[in-house]
Image (cartoon, rainbow, N blue to C red; front, side, top):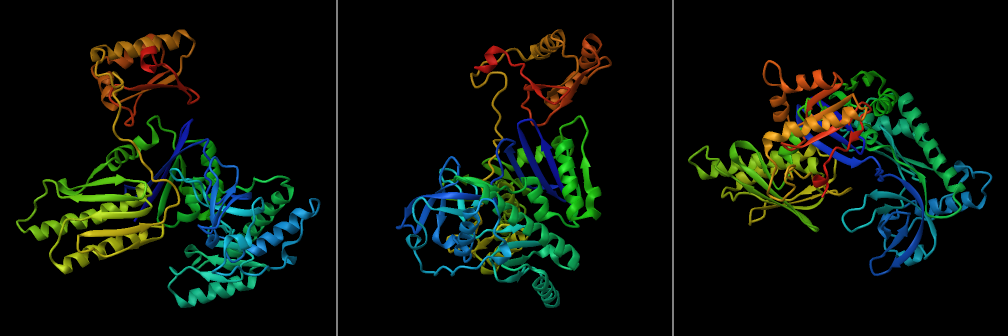
Length: 522
């Protein structure tokens, strides 16, 4: 399996796509102004205790108050709170971490009233981003994730990933970490640490300890809660930290600054792989060039087609996600049971991809086509389990019920990715009346003329590929005439993400120029 990662950096947002053997498997898009909050650590203030839910709401400075349950406080909560009090009691000198004493562990059957009080300042970490009407979900068990290790302050155990199967390697790693781990620190050894030298693990452990000390130094300076004391890496860096392995053939980036950040990070965690980070400089949008845009358009939306006419209908609700499997016009055999099995197995393959692609979390109910044979139902269950093994999110799959329904739970960390694929008509804007399409090129030329007269002589015009083909046809095409008339600084570039008669102008610095007419802005 060959994996590639693509990063599309625009002025307003950043998109990240992961392809495996050319097939889009994960996609994330977010505003550049919106921070990636999972992993951020705050000194928060308890706003309201909820004894009935055994939880509380915490003010961390977000739009909505964050939620913290008693069971999410963690075994090290009292130790961390004790150390936070020692640190904030002296603003001039940081209390040494190695001299900190541990507090008592919280009882499993305890209540939130016994541990916290309203107005109390506590150290918390974001475990889940805000979803729908809910605020962030918090945890009191602070952790710092690296490529090979996860550091847990005041932890007392060394745990090794269960995905490392060799008992000899597990024993080696555990003994090695026991010999180098600092006092008052627990460590989780990640899967990618298998076979790594002690020098690699020791250097990363030192980096993680430094992050914890820097976090507490920020907490020491904090005079008023809420305040952020540690910010997690960008989403791109976090993905590389968790995913980068020998199967990755390339990381393509279209922005020099982000390219530099990624290259520096890869050179630090895997110097031998720094050559896979590549800066894309082509005129075509990066996702168009690598056939990502077309897959995005075909993979999102309410109806998703897959093999030979079969399709899925995916509905998202507040409580759960519902998927209906339909055979469509697919008839490959005269045997109904064979057809049902083939359609269901294909649906299992596509569903595992859709879960990762949309980052669907919570409860998922799938209505497969009914099958009479128990062995066929077992085949489908085993196929679904096998497909989900490559999914990083924690999940649980139940066998088909007697109603033909499969119930799946999948870890929910952030809101489901929903990409609108239905396009608003760019010429009538929903009014149902359009200007004559034959005049579209005249409209574009008038805007080019306006730009050139205003002193902008170098710019790119992005249009739908069909329009670009029309502008390029003939011995002396329209776009060549424009260049002869207005200057060679004009470039006409096809963009698959645009509707048929939509367009956008971008200057030489990559900033989009507003050329909308008054009636288009209404």
